Amino acid sequence: MCQIMIEELKNKTKTTRELTQRFRKTFALNRASAGFAKDLKDLTFTLHCEQSDGAFIHDVDGNQYIDLTMGFGSILFGHNYEPLKKEIIKQLEKNWSVGPITPLAGQLAAKINQLTGVERVAFFNSGTEAVMVALRLAKATTKKNKIVFFKGAYHGTFDTLLSLKSNSSYQAQEIVPGVTQSILNESFLLEYGANESLQFIKENIHEIAAVLVEPVQSRNPALQPKEFLQQLRVITKEGNSALIFDEVITGFRIGIGGAQAFFSVQADIVTYGKVIGGGLPIGIVAGNAKFLDATDGGFWKFGDDSAPSVKMTFVAGTFCHHPLAMVTALKTLELLEENQGEILKTLNSKTEKFCARLNTYFQSMNYPIITNHFASLFRFTTPGKTSILYNYLLLNGVYVWEGRNCFLSPAHSEEILEDLFLIIKKSCEQMEQDGFLIPKKKK
Ligand code: PMP
Image (cartoon, rainbow, N blue to C red; front, side):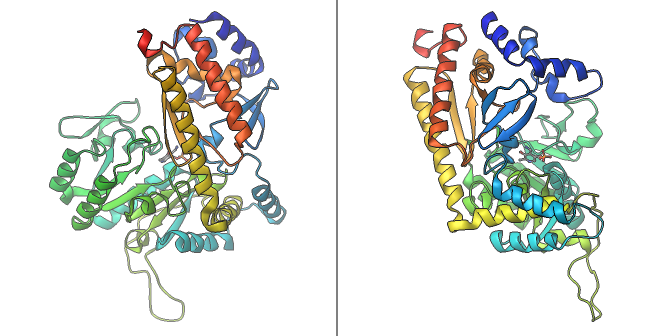
């Protein structure tokens, strides 16, 4: 283990480490122990920051970093983006209370309908909550009880989806304490993109309420199985199951129409989060009235004898239509729409070019590292010991969070990207010197 790098990084993040230690007894934070390994114990902490601006964050020790985490993908335009900040401040002057509904919520639903074609829209506070509700609506509507999801996907922390392995009957298996097998007994966990999965779904469709997909998995952005998704669409339609697209990351990022438009597949229910919230907490369930009607009983009118006609399940939440989240979401959509969605196109092609440049470099050095991207999301693949890359990056001024999804934003200018490239190059050179990166030909 490289003692010099460890000592330098410890020094650089002195205050973060002091705060982490001071509060550890009372502040229970899963990230503070993420990836714990004895030999890197001193570098197991979550960076503490007080300021962010554009493509940069500033930690409590006064260091500046190029941020590749970008609010886990929730900050699309860059930190402290002035047009969003103005809307938030304007709304703060009016109110930030919940209780009565703000007119902003209806306006936002209408805007999402106009931009994506979804029939109805419901608001929640997080991606996890949106996925949980989507599954409930699917079960309520189809009156079936099994759900299918896929290996490699991440859908948040709802219990029925917290599994990484399945048995020979594809039944999801218990992997974390507290999520017991009985909770997982209604969940099937299948291989993503595989023909056997389609076959299994076809054979069991009579009991499957929903097939939940993360169309492009953030942990494996290279896998973009268009045909598989299109076949899922056919099978679920024929079998009266809900096809749910979890677009918490891909939504309003690959394009305004998200992965549905990208793959030419219209899901029954789609969940959104992150980008659309402009950095504020949000989770959205949108889709066909057939499924969304279970939230409120469906359409009815004042002044005639119409009434809610669909049996309702139960969904609710104190902060579901928070005015600050609604106003930032509306402004976000307005900004994304400008110049026919030019901002996303430019950002996505910038990410593609940057990843290609990195891959050319890694290849030219025979390093075993590669990057893959989808829209403005990218990930390094760092086999074996090369995962220490993130520590070297931090030392050299680049921040990547523990889950390792990276995002670019329009605030990552060409100049910043040049610096970023040089930092990655320098980090690789140091890793090679310290014996963590062995060029393939030298093996
Ligand atoms: N779905 C996907 C595809 C996600 O990436 C995430 C979070 N990264 C979630 C759901 C959960 O969202 P949240 O963290 O807002 O609960």
